[in-house]
Length: 304
Image 1 (tube, rainbow, N blue to C red):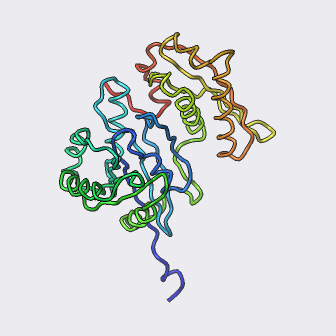
Image 2 (image 1 turned 90 degrees about the vertical axis):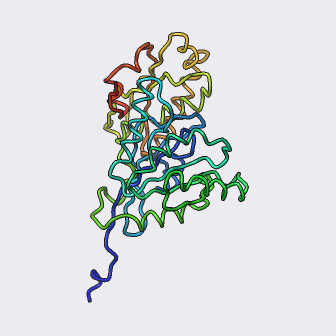
């Protein structure tokens, strides 16, 4: 036998990561990939579009669809986000439902469990944030939720500390079908650098403004150019819904916008490995959440 015939076959498959807002889906995807590919925020509903993270386990490539949180949609943007989440589960080789194990009330999961119950894909319940949860309630929760969603198995993890993540990754790799890899070995996300740059800025917008700025804001890419010296020049537009929010984003003498831009620039320079020149400006557009063009830019389908 040659060495090639002894080698394990390549595997590649899709895993949809579902859950309610703030369950820790993006943190888990980042942990499985081994580096940051999705933005993380304490604010719920941070993930808006479906983003693919790419994890490797031996000869297996695991494509992770980090989806928006599943919740009761009220606005067009909400409906588009929920639609993107369920779309991420179509034709997946496995579905992960990530649940915040610290939450005692679980009525919010009823609609999600009902939507999963009869799906044919292999379904895995992931109880997250177990580092701050007592063991006994975790077992009770697993016993209650497993039959409700017809889950095939349960994993207890802490995406933040990494507890249980390696075991989950090994199991996911074993479930992936044989096949060629869809992405190069060194690629960790399907997001373009242009989209990644807007996501990094949006993350800083949430982090630095906390509850001062509601969700009616977006970051739009304007230009992304490679300079002759190897650095990258990026221009972005922060869109807000009301003129009264302009002062919140700008801060006194433009200090807040400068801080957001500086933090985003530093993180982008680290991620991209080159010097970054980032230029931000603020625009008021009352009905931006009804703009088909903006939906396309942030990776969402137009939903009526």
